[in-house]
Length: 320
Image 1 (tube, rainbow, N blue to C red):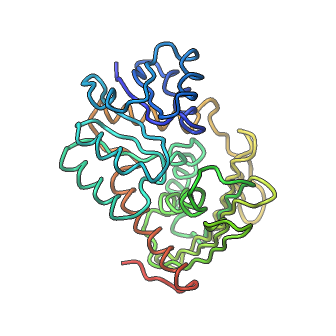
Image 2 (cartoon, one colour):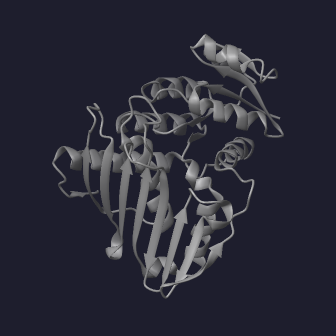
């Protein structure tokens, strides 16, 4: 029985709470939050879990093997550092930290402690993404790929004090590399902070990859609708992944410009459940996660380059 703990019982933390407690062979021993009202609301629903306002209850419990951190981004670094120093595996919701230096510190600390550091890049575990990745490799579509076009929008920010780059666009940053299979070599970006927001709530990103491949990303907090769409265009094949559609219509395959068919996606495989199952598997088998330290370093580096381009008015930044 793998024993886990959760720090953060807010909007997204509630999803982890529900997901972890439903997994067979896993016990969510503790859930922690500084807001007593959140704990008071959750406690009757999950009687098998102990609720606390004191993170020390988790850190000092030798039975807890892994901790999931779903708090405000500015608190991630110190919390993760404390967990890793206790030799416990840690899964941190994105963004891992608010700057690359802190991310690198956690990477080095986890390596020194020989413990698992995983990030909640949930879409890597999406069954539709797995199917698309397999198809790209099986049909050698990657070699003929021209570009990816990615749109991720909503009508409101999902995370407080986080800009659209770190909340929405980050998904397409790691997905573009995951699907293409190589690192980008340059980036250009432009963002705006509309509606008197202190943070960018709209961003356009263009990433260049070897062999002339590109990925364009549009992300917005102030859109009229929620979009979660990726279009992959190759010489003879086009794939459209629209996560807003029903399960049997999420992936469209076009061949020579004609709609070939919809690709079936397995039902009842929630990405967050798959992510949590993978975290548990990594703890049990002491193996590196898919969304691992190397992924964390990559995203931190690219978001740094994007921020550099934003600060320089959309200048092209070469990625070293």
